[in-house]
Amino acid sequence: MTAFLYKIAEAIGIGDPFHPMFVHITIGTIVASVVFAILAEILKRPHYYNVARYNANLTLVASIITIILGIMDWLYFRNGSTEITYILKLVVSGVLLALLAVTFVLNRKSENKDGSKLLLIMYIANFVTAAVLGYLGGSLVY
Image 1: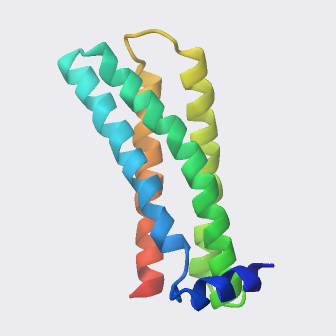
Image 2 (image 1 turned 180 degrees about the vertical axis):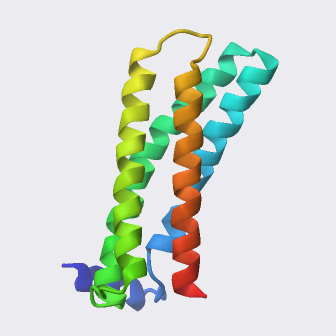
């Protein structure tokens, strides 16, 4: 099934892996969530907490898609290589997914407009974990 999808993509002129095209959505929403949470803390703007919350929730959905595409690319283009960097990326991706799930639950429970220090810590943890994943991904490419 995966090979079929890549063959279709190649037939229409897309010969590159899918993962790099979608990873930007995850990175963008993680950065937006942490930036708006920090701005909300500094400026005391309640609606910025909501923007951070929505971006963090969107990140969970985007990361699931990104991880699935990353695994597909790894299996198709690298034949499931067991090089340590790939294994680390899989492990850190699982950590990010767990952090995002916890962030989602905390966001659902925290309906206050004042934000939460714990949520801010979670947004920062998500960002740092995504940065580690980006570093690992970059080391695979360069």
